[in-house]
Image (cartoon, rainbow, N blue to C red):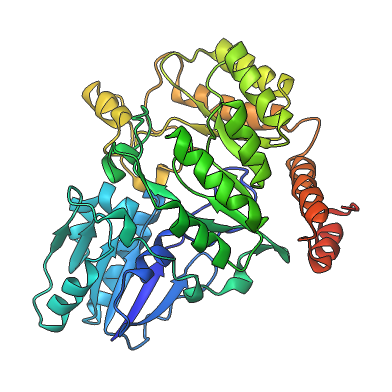
Length: 420
């Protein structure tokens, strides 16, 4: 069976650095397919789709809301030829009813142990319009190594410099944050993979740099410590979402190769200041994720927050505006209040104001987003800050002998600075 898996293109965030990470959802899904499936993969961000290719079935994997309209267009073209199309992925789950209008089938939930029956139904001409496993999640021990072999690895670098491979060590999240849909998608129960299985997958990745994409590593202290201890011998260098703010855990994370974290900065408190300092004290860089436009945010607060970010010496910052994605607390609340101004999903990119802020006009919040980027990178460009953060990982790799001379030469050429 020839299965073509497609990842629709999507636009980068305003001012986001132009490089592409290998998508995680498709390679995890591919690992759940039976062995008899001949799978081909296209990342439309980097490759062209051959709409005339002879395939048995097309799968469209959508992670982001800004991919859905393009995903529907792709499906419509294949279905016009009579090719069956099935959708899956995070954005499919968030936009299931609309997506069903463009699909022969939608798959909702996690794919492990499920795809054999789906493909039997397809071969028998009995493909169901919807396979809904949202409330029936598979045993976490069934999660095997992702199928990274389906990727064209030469495409995922930054001007020749090897970037990161994505991996996950858990699913679910015990938190239920206002703008986030994770509790809907993966459940409120934290479901860690067995540490030995997660670490074995990390060891198998032919790349010294990883992005551990778990929603937060700060879920279970003992699990974090066990995971980091087992990762130390790998000598991998990795970034992640938050790590628990405990000295023993931060120390183990540093020993395990923590390079930098994505840390939400939501106020100007001493708690945040000290949180960032403790990361830095352990040699872990910080990219601040800054969400603007909450109801508590006045214009003066946003200006103060920008100054605060410079004062606490974040290594990088990425600014977005509140975006009410379906199935979040934000969506429910703003919809009830009649404050959502657009449901054009192409606008739900987290850099466009699609709702009525409480303390200012949408236009003013959009201006403040631009001001935040400009002010933070005024004295040191994004490129320079990236160079400094990249130099940190190079120093770690050189210390343990895992930094390649090829990467050194390419990085020095790209950044115009010596990384030694």
